[in-house]
Length: 204
Image (cartoon, rainbow, N blue to C red):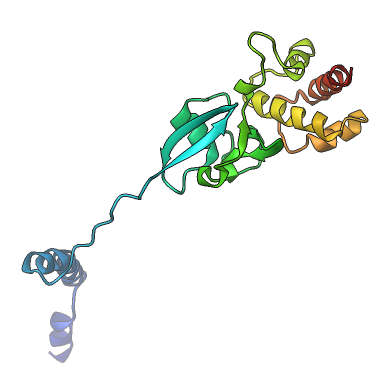
């Protein structure tokens, strides 16, 4: 008799599951009940503030309104419409977004637009002189130094800086100083040849 009483009084799997469901349902309803009674404060997040800045890009001053967190890359592409600068990894690893800032190579995905006021920014759109291409652009065409084109603008901008910096003494030196720009199509030999060719033309 005592064994039968213990068996009937012990919780079954069904009663345990029902109890757990009731507890979970009560917990889920609790915030709604608290909010309805005014006991819980509802928090809201205001949109991020924006500021109007002026960027000097390819010799032209551009006024843009951006949030403080907007990168130079996104300001160039999304606010100004200069889409020649490519967004690749967006982490500063591939170099596709390389531009020149005061003559130096900068990966535009790693710098904020608001930090570049007062600087002279050059993108791939600003290299040509009217219909006349820059010597580096012409050399890239002559040496077939691109395939898909995803990295090309960054490669060209980095090559322009590499030549200006004087790092074109040998193919090995060019390869070393261009190593921050990746080419997934593996056109590295053609790129190095194009940089060397353009350097010779610039020195004439």
